[in-house]
Amino acid sequence: MKFSERRQEEAGIDLTPFIDVVFMLLLFFVVSTTLFKGVNQLKVNLPEVHSKALEKNGSYLEIGIDENGQYFLDGKLVGPHYKRLKNILAEKQREDKLLPLVIVGDKAAPHQAVVSALEVAAELGVTELQIIAKHEVHPQDNG
Image: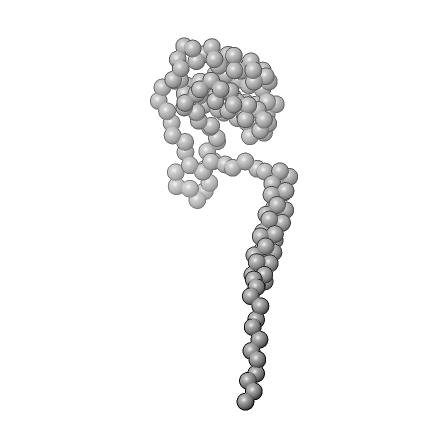
């Protein structure tokens, strides 16, 4: 009686699932990097405030920023240079370190001017900061 020889299958690793996973990762990274390229090119309209800001009782320092990037501290013109703003604000803070700071920026103010004002506040160690926006009441609002 003749028995048929059984062939032993070679032991090996199936690479098909590995190739599928690598392909999916590659696809994910390609798609995600193309999505992030457009972020810097977007024209953005800054958000509007739909709820009223909390009103504070007491005094505070107010940094105003007009459409030309000029800084105002408590209504007095400081100029377009944030270093001058920092010096004057530091002087005011020597009198009262815990005085809250409010930034009021024009809708058309350069974003860099607002960022610079926030940076000045951080460098001086301001602990209370608020950015004021115009509250617009829409007809459907009840408040």
